[in-house]
Image (cartoon, rainbow, N blue to C red; front, side, top):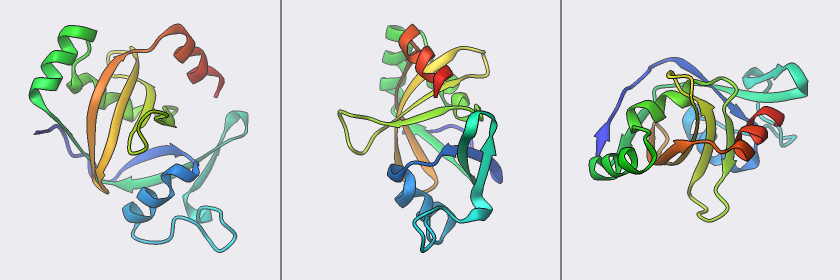
Amino acid sequence: MRVARVRPDEARLRRDTPDRSASLARAIGGPARASNGQPPQSLLRDLPGGRRYIVVHLAVRFVWDERKAAANLKKHGVSFDEAWSAFEDPLGAYYPDSLHAARFILIGYSRQHRLLYVVHAEVQSDAIRIISARKATKHEKARYEND
């Protein structure tokens, strides 16, 4: 496994979805939902288009298998070093993986200005394991732009 970068106290914007509640509760060290079932008001942010996001401040480590990273670069032309930068996209779209319950999908722009489709899993409250990364298809780009 490889640890990429740790970015302490950086705000991460996440879409408010029920699938993220448990990991959010671990990350902030408290309840992810208030008694009314909503995230605490101090964590909510409204953005244009009526979208609501949860802002979480935490240090995040990105880990991956070196052999898998090399194979991914060869197959898809995307390094995992580039893939973790897609998590910095404030408008990154997060979705649960329909094939694997413990995995999530991120569609977001990397620092190289490429729209990436990144499969990942939260292995600990402060560690994300990158599983796969590739350029987003035109359908995924449309989903990113319309969500």
